[in-house]
Length: 220
Length: 237
Image (tube, rainbow over all chains, first blue to last red; front, side, top):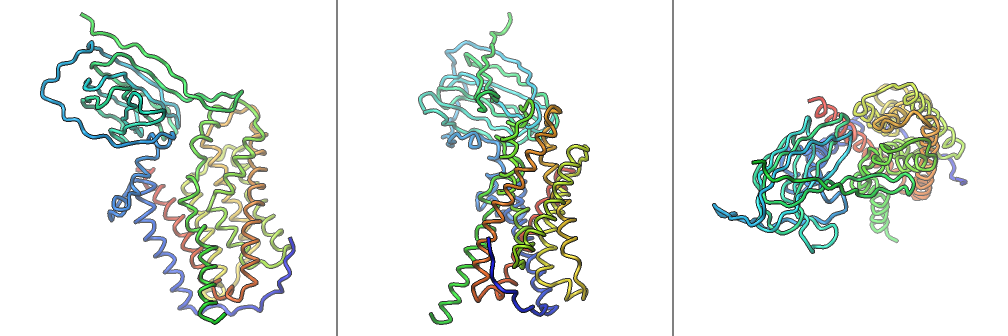
């Protein structure tokens, strides 16, 4: 590459005022962008509410959601459970413990028919990002309904399936220490599956490994 | 073309050149090693020359902090010889700390290192505004500054690699591959920046816009500093 421009005549330094104005302006613009845009999008901190108004806060919440796995997420119409909902499926319980290596994420989902319910509770030894979501039958590959998306070290609740399909969690350890996560649940599900991404060193590709888990009827 | 129209053209050019820089944070993926790449590094078993080279190049081309600094450094360099000299100094600086940091197991805090990298952008922009001459009546050695800040940029590169426990087997090969990739990426990015800059310099508006451009560059540096320092505070909580 050849550059043939002659040296330009030296420019006199700017006046102190001009320099000060430029420097302060630069710092001010940076501060405004930091507070209104960067903090909400990167750290989920929204001091002036611009993150929520512009939807930037979703970037933070969604960083580890189904979207990042290339899935399309939809928001679901709420189902209002009746006070008593008789269940046709068999009553099952499940208690599992997982190890989450540094920066590792995985999914665990139950097979539940529409209207089927469960109660659940999980705890982790540190904060994890998670998304409670479902993949309805026949909705097409990679389509997910997002129920809850947050970051915490525990969550518990009751769940009524809005669709027939597999419903469960994506958990991700965003820190650099290994975590343990325990989940207990009881409800009207028929099967549980763990989904883990495994790197195939020969093909240089990651593929999702499906590990079936047993769910058990309560002991008499 | 009348003056007004020509001014509009100049403004359009500034927007064309600066637009991508300002948008870079939105377009470019997160500055750490991307999620999928991270998984790959976690499962790595031994030497992997090509993938590590690719990651190094990708980190440089998409790493807007390194790019902003380089734009500042070569902004007023008109001779190819000067460009080569300064970029070589920067390369020596960051290679030393990248190799030394990872091999020597020196763990720097990545937020602090990245904040200093942000500071390097502010420093260079202020230098380009001739701020040191105006305020202190003295021009610090620009070559030394590039070398010293290069050292910090290298620590930044090192912390990115250290986030993943690379296997001991093939470690040196992997780091050197990453380093070579960084230089390839740097050449690619520099070529693009130099083409844009040298075209811009032939335009009459260049010097007029140089002041504004370096002010914007400084704002970018301040923003990087704020981003990293708030990350440091949040992580410490």
